[in-house]
Length: 414
Image 1 (cartoon, rainbow, N blue to C red):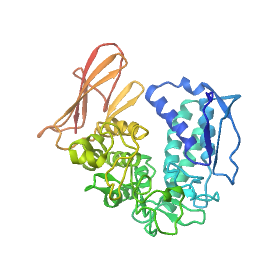
Image 2 (spheres, helix red, strand yellow):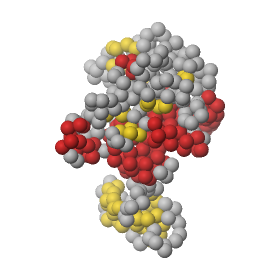
Image 3 (tube, rainbow, N blue to C red):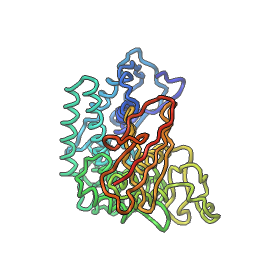
Image 4 (cartoon, one colour):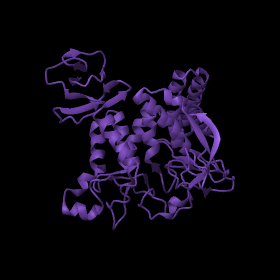
């Protein structure tokens, strides 16, 4: 991609480049377009970030060298296979939470959340590699994922939830032993979303999220607790935020969405929908008191919500957020249960027990599918059934065809 006159930063952050293979997996799975893997893409040309530097900001050039999208993804994954003494990936100058830029300042700090995220990337991309005719790299991904899962269970578990990270000197973060940041939401959520966590431990970890981070009275879900303030822990610039604001113990909405998705993945519809109700900006605008407290647009997802008096419940950055995209996936995929795989749509809804039914009008290119989903009525028995235009389908999905017509689907849940 040509830089188009735009400057950018280069860092030692450990997750940035791993989103490329994950997004590629998502695209190929949803569209069935494998040809994109062979598309040539230019590299950019810029300076290296020195080991003693946190980052640099510059205008990169465009290299004449190209590689296929597939090769770019492989390089990104290989770059991510750097581990510390606990067998967990190095956090560098931060991971998803780039405010934790001092946890691995000496190059030895490790991230438990990143271990779950990398596991997800490895498992997803192993399928892409096999599809692309690269069985050796597929096997390598699976082997690395297996080692990572063992390291997580051996060194990531804290007793009631998963830890968040290890500092350079081996001090844990996100542990019951810590005076601040005893528990961090995203490590628990991704133990479920990645499938890397032990099933019983992941359920216990999500119970801890509910107990320590879900604040029903204030209608918010904290990212971590207690916030960084006066302890000797120095995770980085996150500590520069007022306790309870943004990443420092406020609601960081993307993390809150992941928690709701994790509850849905566990089949816990009550807590999944309850968290959605807290996150949904519309619910902050139902009363004049709510609007006065929230203070930002009730029709756009806020990147964060403050969790400290006198601003408890006040929304932070709106419009400038990736949380909206994740919230869309929470509603459509995790809760309503529509999952697209190329030309097949499957149904795994997680709906409230009080719902009688719901209907989705789903457009596949120029064809509309009217989909009604309902639980079995009292006295009805049997497994989940799916009918398409009155014909019973195999499994819990339908094959999509763009015939420019209308089709009627009924899903009766067991």
